[in-house]
Length: 487
Image (cartoon, rainbow, N blue to C red):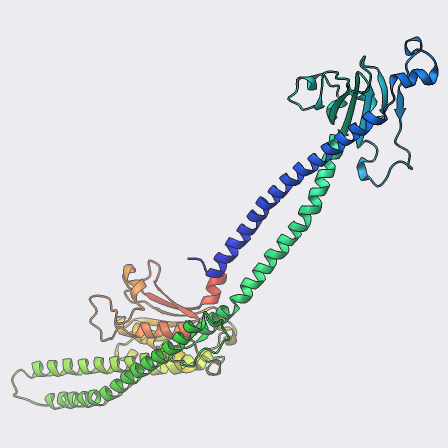
């Protein structure tokens, strides 16, 4: 499910442009309609004016004293290109409008330079539309104009007046008018969308701060969240603060119980182990006792059981200490001396290896020891990690095996030449209390789980694998998670 912030941003950033498009489309359509009506009204007003000022045929006869039929007719053509006649009309100043006046016989009486090319249509009244049959009789020039025809039959019989407006100039004027309206609206839309994004992110900033604080919080930390949050979020923050106290108290009680139980069990187990050892020592020199070998076998089983229980208690005690942690405090981390650290660990497990005649070997696969896996570690925990891996290898390898601790620039490996692990069991080895079936060795199933948790605390990962054929054995690799993500 998407976040509330993402859903709001998606809805608004899609909805606002869609609403703007619908609103702008309506405004553009309305503006186009209104400007067309205004221009058509202007055309009709010019036509009315021309009806009143156009010359009469009788006036033409009186002024010249001759019958019009006895002389050649010459129309009056007006040129409006003079700078004194043209105002601030933009790109339409020369060919914005035109007019023409004909007599009933189709002779042109008066026109401007545009109107003299208009088509004479004696049977047309009003605006000429494309659907009218007379439209087909227009010449190419006339089809580029919005034409209005009126007949002056009342005072001056037969005169036909045509007033036209250039369609291209009209469209340019409409587009310019629409641009003046829509461009500021478009700029305002982008500004408003930017404001919406800023306001939403600013409004959700307290939640982001709380999320960041929760990611870094330790489970045992019961300190309250002190971020300044809106009133709507305050009940949630208050509930979280109460939950933190409960969780921290529960973890503390569980940790104390595990630690106390482990400590309480160590003493009686140590006493039982001592008594079992003493019993074995007393049985050995006895003679004449029937089934003394059977008694020694049972005492050996008792001793092994006590040793296993002791190992389990120690592992549980370690688990109780490291489990509540999600990350290590920076003051506990330091740059390791790998040679010295591994010397200590190898010395710790050497006795157990000698008992099974297992050879331990350390290999440094780089020229400079300072280049070995350059990370910061908690030395105490990391010794425990490597010791658990070596201890696990010693316990499950046959007698006479070879266990090699390999130190490399990007990884640390524990490699043995034992029998390995079934492939389907590899993914479960780090689970708590999991032990592959058929094991006869002492163990609790917690060693690799503890090692995996320590690796997680150091942002490392444990990789389990069998050695490639024809070799047999098991490999555990300690690798940096960041190096894996880069590859």
